[in-house]
Length: 68
Image (cartoon, rainbow, N blue to C red):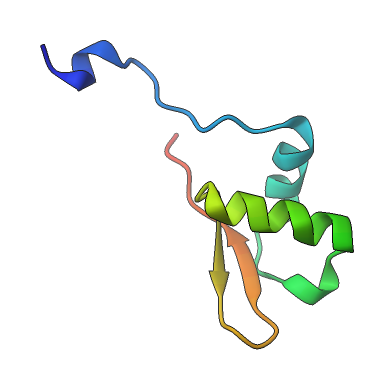
């Protein structure tokens, strides 16, 4: 039996706050424009591969594309 046959839907678990932040970050946004609390959440979401960080000095973050 293949794994694809066992898994019907693969989804990364997110909190309600993370979902709201994902909606906010559909357009590229500078990390420094976010509050300290949002920056902390963004770092966790980057580790979950929900967001992509672009650059090293004053980086930009944007939500990864999600399949429909």
